Image 1: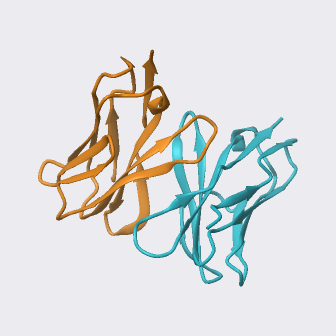
Image 2 (image 1 turned 45 degrees about the vertical axis):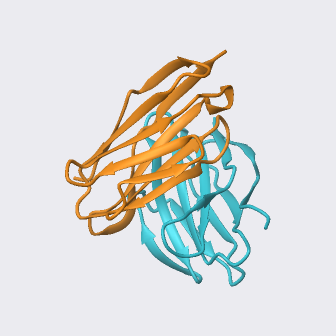
Length: 111
Length: 112
């Protein structure tokens, strides 16, 4: 099976802009989670979607949002970008249970 | 507050040597503990997953142990290889929340 894919892999944006990141889970996986990884904070949970519904949400401002489509593909959006949003954004898919499979991530740089 | 502390923060060893990484957590009630390996610039890859009833889990040269009473876990790497150079992250789930708690990771460098 193909692994989790994320697009784009790298992105440079300017403060105040918005960005949309995409994640395609492993075929058959219905749960998709998003994480932010920075050197200072490590990995932090953003949100989780299951069958097009947001099931869990981490402690991030409302500028961070997401959605999941009927084919389980997911997108996350960050509006009004700030310098502190520069990070590696990781997507992970899961069939059920505890196992999660991570994608390669999208490296976002905000200037 | 749920917390996961990993030690050491970084570690340098010679190829062929063994090493042990530590993970202490305060998450309660406990659900499961996972160890991930993350190469630079790539997503984490799962090494082991342990639930409350498991105290040892192996994956090749990687062996994880869990002591749920003391809330401690360790990851032992045997006969290290250059490709083991990576960050190792401990993740604990539970505490009445789906949201997992991540450790900051241990950066391992294996020198030839």
